[in-house]
Length: 82
Image (cartoon, rainbow, N blue to C red; front, side, top):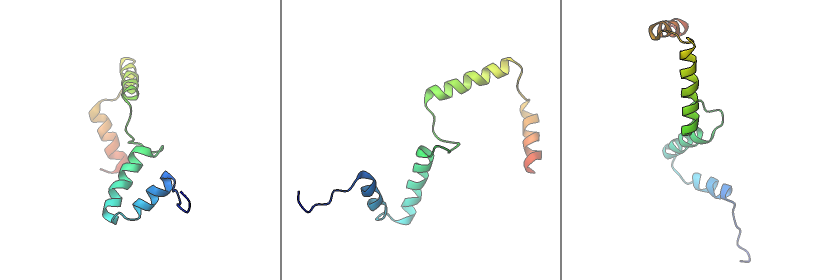
């Protein structure tokens, strides 16, 4: 394959993105940031992670470490002026 330039997957992806209309790129951006950014607070979780967090939450509840829902809402409303 003389004279044929082979692009890496990254280079191919970047080249493809440049051909996509701007409005469609927004959808791609949202997908990528939600699924592949390490600091995304709402990144999808594996079932094991969810079960672990639920177990931790239940343990806190059993130890009495919880706040009444209405009180929590009042605290949040006061904190953020809602």
